Image (tube, rainbow over all chains, first blue to last red; front, side):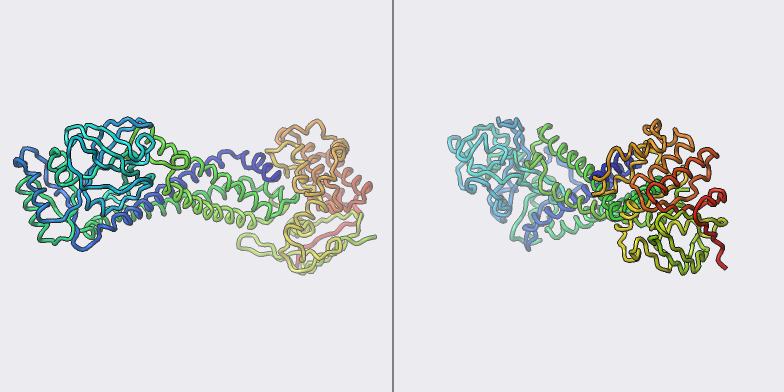
Length: 407
Length: 222
């Protein structure tokens, strides 16, 4: 330890510019690895999550990119006509979210109301931390309470069994809600088309909708619900018929893709981008590692006399190796701390901005994928550290400790 | 007299870039404790290479080397480092100091690697050394702020701080004026006289060489 302290304070830090350069290079390497690892894990999680849609006869609606929403082009009761068609001819999973309401809560977050029908609920199998499943067989009546699920962040303010009165933005009337269950911490949903992007439900309220609810809801809910509507146990011909109905009544062209087709789209665009990110990360990593080795070797050249004198008076290669590993271990550890704080600050920033759809719970605000990415960084740090230290030692051993070096 | 060095070099190949030079062919050296030996010879004959081998800095040669009764081939790198620290002292030219350290830190450098022997070292030992060498006023200075003579004495102090049994001295007076040259030589011989320290000096200076018990002339290998 004393040898190490001596080397750090009297030898390495005397060439502070080299230490700073190494710190910056390692930071670049660490942050690049961290970002890539987290993106890849998040995409993998998205893949796992969306798997339930990859079934024969399941089609997901997608508004044609050339369609522009024009409310005037929608015939009177057009959206309801589409829903009537859906109710009579097809099995469908309905989900729409992002209807913001002010609901008092401990964290002063704006709350997102999310609406889903029974088929969607069955498909997703939301995991609950408390309470019971939703009941979709209720009557929409002013006096009746609608059963709801809430995010973990609301569970203190609204425990299971409590009632909430809200001005519902889609029914445009007051309704009473009763908390039936609480979702697990950090429950999320991935975007169908960008699997590495997620919305978190810690501050969301899930309302069950049935045919009656949709019928009484305004056009915002009805139209939004159609944007990602999932048709189940059907055929391509039947969804094409539905597409025609939608075109006639809404003036909008909808395409229906199976999840397999969505994967193809994902593979063509996002996976390709992810591959490019991975390759660039790898190239950057190789360059940064190369620069780090070069910088380390420059420091060896600049400090060769100092090392030789130390070896001359009793320093052994094994002690020197320990000192190098400790030194680079500290540099990597400092960088890990910095990456950790940046991540923690970014997570905490969502709390500060009251960004309800991205707020997460975790130790220091970090969630599983952050810790995983930090672990990947740690493993890469060990590998890079070993490459650098062994190269440094090889370089030092190549120059024989000799009196000639000192003259 | 106790024999402490028994060295037989069959061949040492000196490599420099693409050229290879064979030196110290079939060289034999036996040294007794307390002897003063000077090694002389023209440049390139292998004087410093020989000192590197004796000083356990170079194992890349064919031959056998027994030091203090132990075959050095059998010693691990860490043991060699320990022997360099505790049994051998290197007195080099005045440039062999770490410029970022003070003179005091430079002198005390071997203590960092002394392990358990550091406990045996007393402050008065250090005081005795610096008083004998008269470098107390420059202890807090950095080498770049010292004169050539002062630096040479600091290098000397570092070489003897662990009370070595052998002092290996490589051109210690090469760039010094007459006064300082005499001072360093006197210090070396004082160590020999007071502690029976064996002195092996590589030098170009025949006047200095003559002061030793034995002078070994190295010649270019044929």
